[in-house]
Length: 360
Ligand SMILES: NC(=O)c1ccc[n+]([C@@H]2O[C@H](COP(=O)([O-])OP(=O)(O)OC[C@H]3O[C@@H](n4cnc5c(N)ncnc54)[C@H](OP(=O)(O)O)[C@@H]3O)[C@@H](O)[C@H]2O)c1
Image 1 (spheres, rainbow, N blue to C red):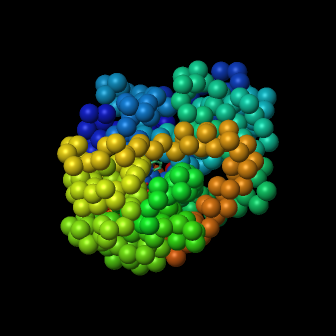
Image 2 (spheres, helix red, strand yellow):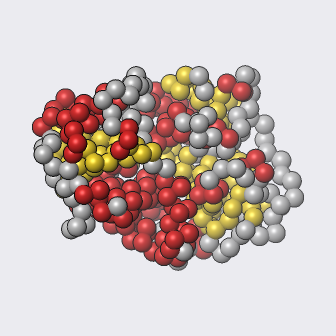
């Protein structure tokens, strides 16, 4: 059973490893991972692996295993063996898997639509990551939409949550929302949602030189600037910043440029994870970390699961639909092909309009 491991001490390094085959205990199921997506979000799982416990989901095998980790991925897997009374061979699940050919789960709380992973080793992890969708039972499930779903669904669900958070805070009185790392898929999910919302402030994208044309071509930003030209943003307007980059140099220059008009900054992502970190010039008092699983859990409590599903699905269906205009899916053949592209993903060298999908 092949798996792709990442070096916990140097996230640029990965290795392919041959792990032992999986044996099932009573109540467990064995899955063959079919396809999964891989974006900067997965590299962030590695960067935050210790702090947010992403390394706890799946354990690597082989020499020196404690220095290596399995980055979780969003994808589809098929049940190929079952010792569970509730789940039979042939079921297809959407959820959080290791970058590996197979895995086992211990299904609990099984409903017609979902199951929860019940292994004690994952009990301390956010419930959203332990939830698997039984897609064959979904009305209208269409396999041809699997790629879009695994590439964009989770990222645009995050965008829905950010939109909801800002809207319920009356946009912090802002007249514009500046999104940093505007070419990322999470950013485009947010910009698309804001562009559809007549009551939302205008949307400004900030990006690198090489991605400026792409960001402009998406048509979902009212204006876009490069990191070098960020002082062209109108600093006379109250502004909310949504940061996907964690680039403290950009944040510092932007907060300084906006001054007191920097009303609120949501720290969402870490696409520029290799940039040195400093705190100078950043308005920390008006900055707040954002963690989508926490927001989702809160809203399910506030609205109930059905209403959360209704609102989030309506948002995501529309924003994913808008991404169809530019998204080009590239299929990688197996973990070896992913290992070859892995350094490019780490370094941000994947074209912004490309979505990588691995077929096992
Ligand atoms: N807090 C949460 O709950 C949550 C949930 C979902 C996603 N996120 C975060 O949102 C971020 C975006 O994820 P995504 O999957 O949407 O990204 P993506 O589509 O793969 O983003 C690619 C873009 O990120 C920038 N980039 C990537 N790697 C880079 C590097 N090494 N150096 C410089 N720029 C780099 C580039 O944008 P530019 O040129 O425009 O900078 C690139 O076009 C991730 O950090 C992810 O973890 C957070």
